[in-house]
Length: 576
Image 1 (spheres, rainbow, N blue to C red):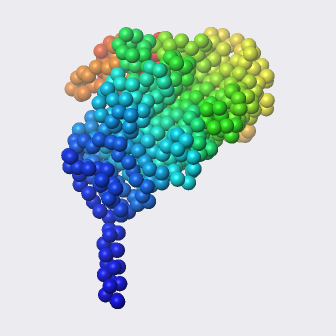
Image 2 (tube, rainbow, N blue to C red):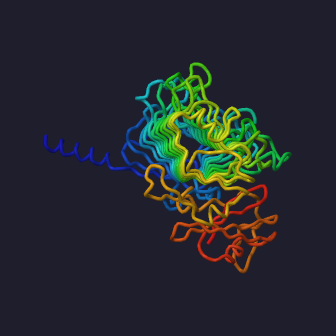
């Protein structure tokens, strides 16, 4: 009897040892997943091998890794299209996903894979579906959970209509270090990542995310599980649309895709949006707003829908017709909960709301827009320590009452209207629409004479006197503690390094070194440096047509970050 028990125990112990599977071209990936039973099993695919979906991640609680064998990139490194040759491929046939999940699937890791349609003519909705966005998923307890997509290249083909890269309608999951691109349609919304019928938490970190409609969106589809996607972290991503899609730059080159926003929240709670680069968004199907917070109960499931507890910090926004719009509550019946607890802090706004015709016409462009809904306007909105470099229209448009509003320690241009609501400007608009507001320790730069009154504690500079802002190290007393001093504007040492400027470039040799950025027209190079006394210094120098940026930067010396300033465009680059 003891012998039998010992043999059974040894057999059980053997079966629990993780198994490593190696699949070569022609191997059956689905059958291998189905036969994998041990926690920690790994399935390694040959680089260049192709597997046709739909591949279903089964309802197993054991963790299974599906990865390209000997993938050369170190963990934590973002992939790019140039890494595709080192990846195994999973293809989506027409009318199916490449990868999908069963209810209850858990513990999967997908790493180092190229995921794409089977051909450029295939009709595909979503390439990777985690969970189910339809009425087939109505119970939160059966959501797929603990799924990781890491270092994957997920994309459509040029000129192909394809709706979505990843559908996040599951429980906890993460998308990291990946390149997700080429999702577009002329007639419907498209996304790199979208979630509406899941619970979270979600981690979206260090990816390139590209889509025509909304690059990233939560909400907007019906939540059959009646939950708010929560615990969403979006950090260290490049969230962008390619400039060759922009019809204002290339009016006849390709199909005009339906373009809306870079990031949108329609149903989300406890969201951190930090250290991202948001760039390239123009007026097309909507008004070219970079970030849109707009609770939609009618779309997402009922009046319980919310957008709340959102922090937007240490991001750069550049090349977009308008900045950030906040809808206080759904403006359609049955409404939603009120948008609340929004913090916008330590962000750098470049070519945003500048009136640049290459981003389309928003009349007038707005850096911030607050609008009311069925159940009122937003509450507890803090805009603090931001640096805004351009504004051709309104700094802040107030369409209704905003309670608990704070606007502090910002460097901003007045633009044509500054703070405006129902024809009232400056202090008058704040008094009318923002009961109990705090508006203090801001620097507002006017293009001409100072012609609008703001609350006490505001530095109002006339005649585009930006040198006074950066040259004097503007500091003012903190409004709640006159004995302390706090620097004004974004902490650029945390926000920078900035992204490379997004206009077309040429490769060139310059002073024996490879040069990646060559202006196609005259630009001015602006140095913004910070000395130990927390003061700012601005140095301008012309950059000739065809001159290497690296050589021009060296002429200024030191370690700093630079911005390329053109009469109509502001772009950014990092330099040393």
